[in-house]
Image (cartoon, rainbow, N blue to C red; front, top):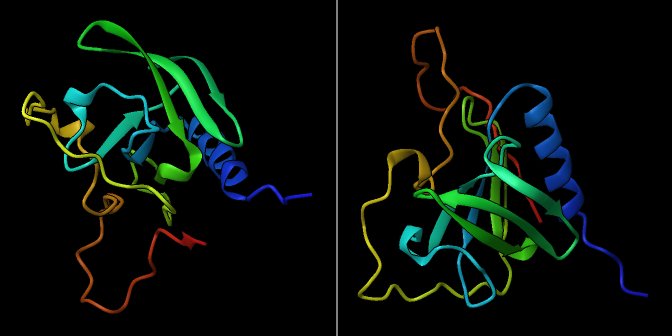
Length: 151
């Protein structure tokens, strides 16, 4: 029998942690032919999705797929994302979360019709945002990272 990967379990746990703490969970996803998302919101072969309970309907985080419906520009869309294509789940407010390796995801080619105008909150992060701090910035090399890569 083939062992089920740990990634879907970790994603569900991180999602629950975000919701329990009042944070807004975001999924960063590599888009390929198996990913069902609005192409006009894909940039650089990636998309970031707000998956908070008040932003999505009928969220199902399975072992193979994450599926839900959500509104994009007022239009309801059915979203389907392979778990293997998720490269991060993090809390928008703090940046705390985890990044993951993406195996077998081939970047989608951006077509002429795709727009570049996506709101700042929906762009995939180049790096996950650092948590806000009231302390003065520290010199490089001294802080603990807030994310951990899972293989």
